[in-house]
Image 1 (cartoon, rainbow, N blue to C red):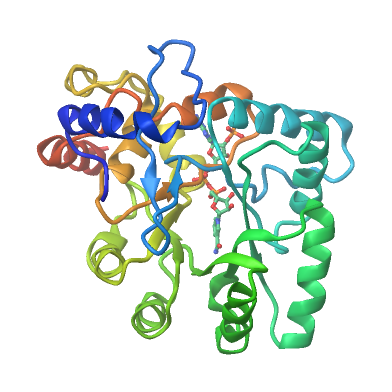
Image 2 (tube, rainbow, N blue to C red):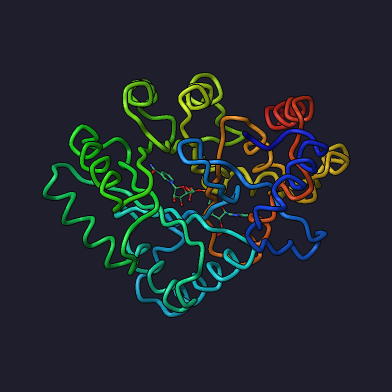
Length: 309
Ligand SMILES: NC(=O)c1ccc[n+]([C@@H]2O[C@H](COP(=O)([O-])OP(=O)(O)OC[C@H]3O[C@@H](n4cnc5c(N)ncnc54)[C@H](OP(=O)(O)O)[C@@H]3O)[C@@H](O)[C@H]2O)c1
């Protein structure tokens, strides 16, 4: 079951989910107290909030006390807004340690969906890397481990599937970004029992719509969209203009609603993971979709708007 499209659909879904004790999603300050619809992980039926948190660059703050305090504030606002999934990688400098620091400061928030990656070649190096990753986060086990950029996936996937079978891990995935290695990703999605794939999908890069998102739907694979703001360029460009009246009439209140809502309205997409250093931005991001997600006609208009920029 996927929840999206029209406002009416969304209302029905919310009614249906009320019995599931939806996470305590707090509203964006400017919005009524409604929760964005949860998304289903096809391989398990578990429900996840639609907006997660990325950490590349933004959480790579080293020991800088100001950067660390800012990151804790972002994580606090993320969890307060009902967020659960945080994504990281050994590739992201000190970001894993920043997340670990934030989790300790926040008293290990309930509901954390910890997503990290293997980013090396060879099983021995991967095992050592994973031990370090675990120590930096300060968690016993991860919700999701992904093979970063498909690096040596032939070695890592069997190990991750074994960990999942032993109950040491809940979900297994692979990632790509910037449109790279899509043909290989497609082959892996067809041949391996993946729970998740992570790929680049944003209004400026919609290539995933052609094959990968439909394939994920067909194979029952959850999809995480990385770089949902095209590294920030997209949202900064959009914010130079006023949100059009037709977008407001369709239920959008912010450019985050516009940029993330477009993605979340795709039936093959599960979660988006924008990264940020700012509390105001993370609050806006986790609130995306609360006014309803765009229908097909509105999405077409959004694409035309984007292409004309
Ligand atoms: N191969 C892979 O596995 C892979 C590759 C790329 C990315 N990823 C994952 O995907 C995550 C997201 O991608 P990304 O970090 O490259 O880029 P992104 O999320 O598309 O963009 C991040 C930028 O957007 C800005 N921003 C965020 N929310 C905003 C808002 N509401 N209004 C205005 N600006 C906003 C941030 O600036 P401020 O700090 O000013 O808010 C930041 O500079 C990464 O952090 C990482 O976790 C994975």
